[in-house]
Amino acid sequence: MSGLSIAQPAVGLMAGWGKFPVTLAESLKRQGYAVHCIGLRDHADPVLADLCDSFAWSGLTTWGHAIRFYRKHGVSEALMAGKVFKVRLMQPWRWLRYMPDWRTLRALPRILRRDGRDDTILSAIVAEFARDGVHFLPATDLAPELLVKAGQLTRRALSAAEKRDVDFGWMMAKEMGRLDVGQSVLIKDRVVLAVEAIEGTDECIRRAGQLCPAGGFSLVKVAKPQQDMRFDVPTIGLGTLETLRAAGGRVLAVEAGRTIILDEAEVVRFANQHGLAIVSLKSDGAGMPVAA
Image (tube, rainbow, N blue to C red; front, side, top):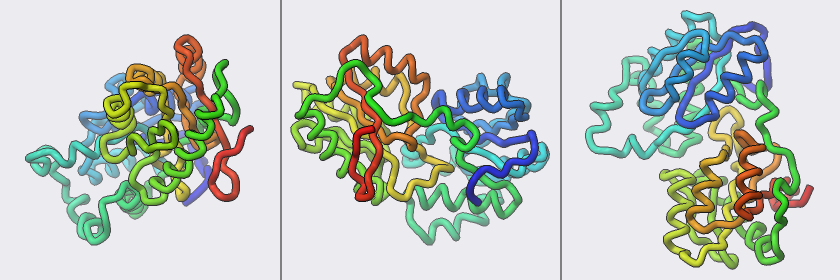
């Protein structure tokens, strides 16, 4: 299912970690939607319980509970927002903590026959919800203002060397995205310092800082070439910039129209205060960055 087709005031929200679910819920409420939220346990912000019209906690592997909640509230179309820490599924005793319900158990054989890449898992989850009449749409269909526009966002522009690093990093990040490994790479002098995988962007940035104590590196974060805008959309916020600065990074490059910036004015203000550069670039036909 693609495109925005919500014809009713009720909308579902599946909320993971971070500020994005809160920002999205606030936007939906301003637009007059009744928001019925499933908060993923150990991830979602509890403030959502007060912000949304109805709220329930659910586990990562209790899909039946989530489906019943949405159907009870008349939700046929829903949005995903926020990060899920997949690394927690690698912890000891994970099957006790994340015991699947019967609905999930029935679906697992179909999923386990494939692979454990993010797109594979999320596509399978979306398909299971659709079997019960709950269809997930791109969150940015309802909150397009969160997508960053192309251009130089900060006072400081890229130096020639930084521009070369961004071009090189863009190519690497797109390839990592094509393989569904991660969406971010850290580059210094056209050398790959770190590639994001299961650990997430912040830990990837910290690792680059440890490997390059001289600092001055660039973070390039892009959408996957096959990006499904219903989930896993690249998202940055103030925390990303704070981590980048603390690690010694100097540049953030993102993909225009396919990246969410939360509290953009605050992010840009922080970058200007600390001499960081942020650029938002479009991709050309070959997937390489072009200036606005």
